Image (cartoon, rainbow, N blue to C red; front, side):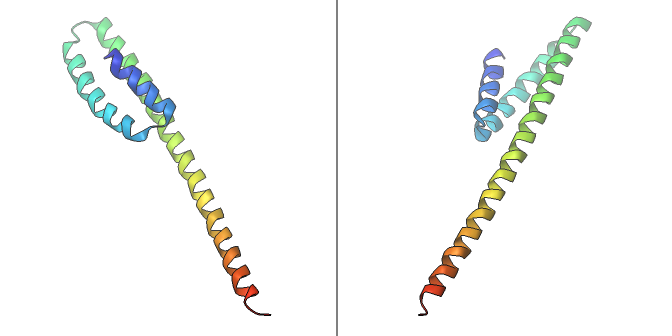
Amino acid sequence: MDELLEAFRQAVMDKDWDALRQIDDKLRIELSAQLELCDSEASKRSMASLLKRLQKVYALAERNARDNYQEIAAELGKLKQDQRAVKAYQQGSQFP
């Protein structure tokens, strides 16, 4: 589980969404198995704490992905403006 959590952390830091998706699937399976093994209140509290932390990281990763999407959309908008400017320049330069 420690290796999965470290890989999860690294994927989030690297913004490697494909790796994060793959790790997420493995992590869910591992967490389900760990939850079944919880037989004491202390272990249940520890797992609950871990789950809360993971949920927070997921929320931050999701927000980061949305932020990246907005940045990409903005760059695409600028690209379209540049394309229009080039086209207008080319059309304007055809006529003396």
